[in-house]
Length: 376
Image 1 (cartoon, rainbow, N blue to C red):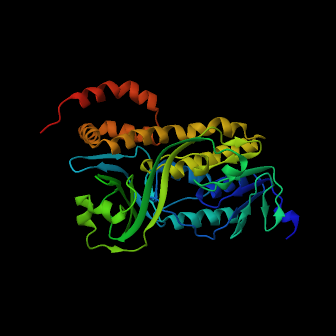
Image 2: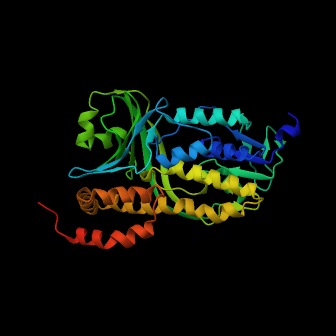
Image 3: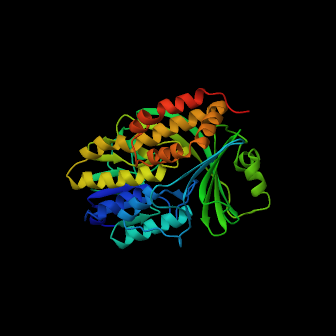
């Protein structure tokens, strides 16, 4: 292979949704992009498979328009435990649930159609103190983007691993042949963890579970610990093998060094309980493209932390509820009696409203409600 084919403006390492989104955003600005990944599409991953309205809008900016032909629409989020159910509708737009491999294929098609050079089944060699190479040939680039996930090799290679791992939990995902029974993504709390139910088709749902208990706790055990789900799924056909992964909340001291930037889970993360992993990656991709179009990575370095701020704040709150069931029960009962507060919190969660403003307006009310004795 000639060296010219290994020369580009931007080399993206990692061909998941984060890397593809960055490649598309950059290519839309006429940047010459080479993307390489050791795997071959479509690339699957254990995840909840729900795309929020804000993420749909960001995907549309990348030229990927999702519709119900790709999956199934949902109108909000439902949280529930054994005693309370809280629902919140989106203030604008609908979410859509779709198989991860469908989303990946759409992103691959878009990247190819606009001229991103895609090298699948092609690992990038990163040896300490040496330049990146593909198939034994050095790659020449202006910028290198590491979008290679939580265990990022780029992060280690460039020396950006310093940071804090705040939480680490375990996630699993399966699909069931059953018509969705709800217009919501449902988040059910049980004694072993959370189960997320997302419609992904007219007769199929995705069930993702997250637990802090390692070992023998898997999808079946979490579902069995939640009576409402156990009964609904008792006779449903399983349509995919169980797939697992680790979910973390992580912050890094820096995500840029010289001409190298980290993106997506490689650059920090929020626990999957927030459902914001893809949303953060898409926002980072658009920010990165604007920064490089401006001539440097400075704007990306300065703005990256903001893409993590709200999701990580929500992760801390939700994981506190996970560790303290009595607190969780109290919060859910208060929100069940105050549906408008639930919808305002959802707006904060999606970045449509300010967390600071919400707390100024509603923290005293919530505090008083929390102090009142629970009804028998």
